[in-house]
Image (tube, rainbow over all chains, first blue to last red; front, side):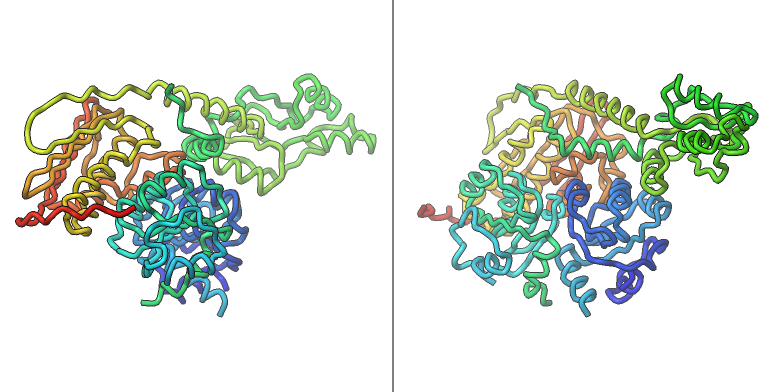
Amino acid sequence: MNALDLARKLNWEILQPDGAETEIRGAYTSDLLSDVMAHAPADGLLITIQANINTVAVATLVHLRALVVCHRRPAPDDFLAAARREGVAVFRTTENQYRTSVRVAYALND
Amino acid sequence: MKFADVAQRLGAEVAHRGSTFDREELHHVMASDLMSDVLVVDRSRLLILTALASDQAIRTADMVGAAGVVVVNGKTLPAHMTRLAAELDVTLLRTRKPKFEACVALRELAAP
Amino acid sequence: MNVLPISPEQSSLVILDLLFKLKIKEVMTTTLITAPRGASLRDIQRLMKENGITGVPIAEGRRLFGIVSMDDIITALENGTVDERADRHMATNLVVLEDDMPLSFGISYFDKFRYGRFPVLNRNNELVGILTSRDVSASLLLELFKEYNKLEAQIQPPAPAAGERGRVRRKFPAKRYDFENAGKASHEIKKELTGRGYDPRLIRRVSVAAYEMELNMVVHSEGGALTCLLDPDRVELIAQDHGPGIADVDWAMQEGCTTANEWIKSLGFGAGMGLPNIRRVADEFDIQSTVGVGTTVRAVIRLPPVAPSPAPPQTP
């Protein structure tokens, strides 16, 4: 499934669509960037509340395709601009990381 | 869901068995690594899943009255963290599963 | 005695911070070794050998025409074309960087394109430098040392607690970056209220406020103290620090706004929720701050009119 389809299916807000039409293979849930760098799967979706520009730096370093910002967290402009520049799609949901993880798992396995 | 169920679904080991281990009926899960994110929540019978293997995870659990903490990614629990869990009576578990997979294993608690 | 609370793992996060803060122009080599279009490949090979470099931009004045790499020289030696002009053999489909771009861009280019170096142009398309991976590591190491030195200079002893008479009053010092002890004060406050038998939900509100106030001082201030005043009808928490002060309090009160850097976030802090959390759980809240002097945060949680009976002693 590509990131855009997943976002639409789960009713996420689309904050930064560039790069959203890439295939998602797997997901990783974390708010600690060192943890993401060490373990996140390539071509994956990151489920997090860490909406800042360094998250984008890590996403490009480990080849994550998209980020979903959970728990209604604000997404600053510099974060979205960096994501656009690096081609990393960004979505937002009101649900927390736990519920989002469960729903993503269901959606990807359908 | 009881702690024993949680441990079984996560293949988790029990680092500290708190006094409510047998009777606590867990209703909610928070999967967060940032302490203030956990502090926003006002829920009882709460289980915290986190990659943060530090004293602060225990203190935060104590502050919000969470029933227990599960450390994910198979991270080593420092001795002082386990000691603090015992001191503050917070059940502490540890699983090899990454947080995403751990959430999925506990998906029954997400039912609205 | 004061050990820096930063592990090797966390230092990589300080570097991440720098990837976005530093611009390419701050990191690149500006003493350029170039050759004109008419130079022979043999001349260029000599330049490489004398200067210990593996790539030479072909430029005249500040105008960039191409680049000759070590590979090009080796091929020329094999084919016997090493005396020919540079512009017959130089690479012209160049990937260049702009001097104003953040360093993170440069790093992703190294990953994407597999070249060893990138010429750097300014806004007027003039060649102003060259970026190699050695430049990147040297700069990051240097910046990392600077950060460490800054942190070391900032660890200060806590302000001495002043004595006072009055109602039930406790004062706890808060020391900058003292993560080991952060939360002990709020725990004591929570214990005090639990011992008096108050409703768990009420206790949770006080705990959240106290904990966030304590953490804010440990994470963001030069040090200070958390005071808890317990009256029959209310509990008042006052967090007072001696610096650095908040320039824009309204900004700081917004969810998600934080000055925390990456290694602080790696410890689980800096979500930008602290002050909004305190305001949310308190019945009264105010914050005063002066840059260069300090910040005082005050939160009041009202207690029910009838004092509950103390909780029975817990059996171990």
